[in-house]
Amino acid sequence: MTDKFKVPPFPAVILAILSVQIGAAFAKSLFPVLGAAGTSTVRIGISALILLAFNRPDLRKLTAAQWKAVIPYGICLGAMNGVFYLSLSRIPLGLAVALEFIGPLMLSVLTSKSRLDYLWALLAIAGIALITPWNGNGIDLYGAAMALLAGTFWAGYIILGQRTSTVIDGAQAVTVGMIFAIVVILPFGIADGRLGNFTVAMIPSAIALGLLCSAIPFSLEIGALKHIPAKTFSILMSLEPAVAAVCGLIFLKEYLSLIEWLAIVLVVTASLGATLTGKPEKQIVQ
Image 1 (cartoon, one colour):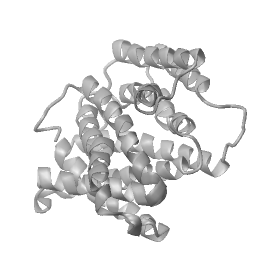
Image 2 (cartoon, helix red, strand yellow; image 1 turned 45 degrees about the vertical axis):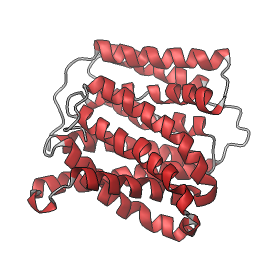
Image 3 (tube, one colour; image 1 turned 180 degrees about the vertical axis):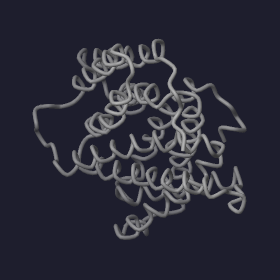
């Protein structure tokens, strides 16, 4: 998708974030019926089918180097989504997103080459801290652990996605990667036992979920990762909690407090700062 409809890297990341958060509204209609594993399986499965139909990759033409790159990328992609949905089944979305973001945020700090980059990371941390419920009420340790694990996979997804984009075009990478993502998540969906609750009436929501939460954003992100450093991508993704809050206001009528809007300002400032002052870095190669 990215190679047929090219989008500049920074707008691509923003559009990917918007796509994921808008798609979350469709997930709400499936999650109570299919459960975490079932919804994640449907999401990845529909995405894989859409991408296969649209991009039609010729698997026979892939080289050994391309397989070596795309297989771990796909496995990490599937694990990231599956584990994050498990966290959502136990803790609130805002907390899950905040905890998950620790993964890419730490990646941005560890790969930093400028002291100024630490300032943007600290601003992002401050913003996330403001929108995170720290009183401990109702916090499920298993859910929190799954969100942190999802963040680890998220950091791995960024690194592997950038590496994969150097040896295979973005559309092919995402499409083939989705095949391995569904291989990872499908056993958990089957074991959960609620996939059988899927009905014909859910198909439109499932298609929207697959497009908005996986097919479109992953295609946009793999294209962006080919042109921007992993560090810059990671801090740009700090917009995720802010966009989630705005989408919650628009689609779910979740009104924000002054403190929460301050958090959004801090996160957006960090993202803009990283974009405007980021130094060119050597791309990750295989």
